[in-house]
Each structure stands twice: as C-alpha cells, then as structure tokens.
Length: 82
Image (cartoon, rainbow, N blue to C red; front, side, top):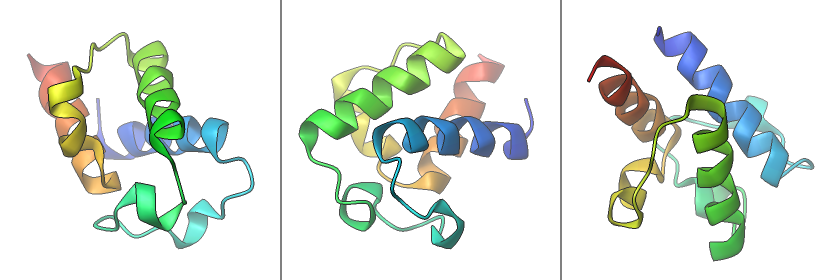
C-alpha cells in the first residue's frame, strides 16, 4: 500500500475521533494528541479506527509509534509489508 493511501486511512480515522479538526493544516511530525487535543480515550478510539480500517493489531506498547502522522504512515507501511 502506498504512502498516500495510508495517509488517507490515518486522516479518515482522525476525522472519526476529531470531526471538528482541520486536518488540512496537520504537519507530519506534529504530535496528534497535542495538535488535535486528543485525550487518552480519543487516542484509543483513533487506534481502534486504524485497526478497523486496516485489520492490523496495534498493541498499547506501540502507541508512541502512532503519535504523529508520519509515524502512523511509516508503521502501517511496515506492518502491511510484513
């Protein structure tokens, strides 16, 4: 799966948990939790939305890899190749 496709999946998952957020201004290295004001429940919902969209299991110990848009795209790309 290409980076653009993965980024679209991540953005759709973010839109589910933060529908009021302007994702057009989101930069790849920004911490999603801070930028979008996601609390722990929102972040868990985001990870669940990623799982539902990709069928990839994301363990809690791996959550820090998903704190940024770039991190999400990279980690999903690695897991799709596995």
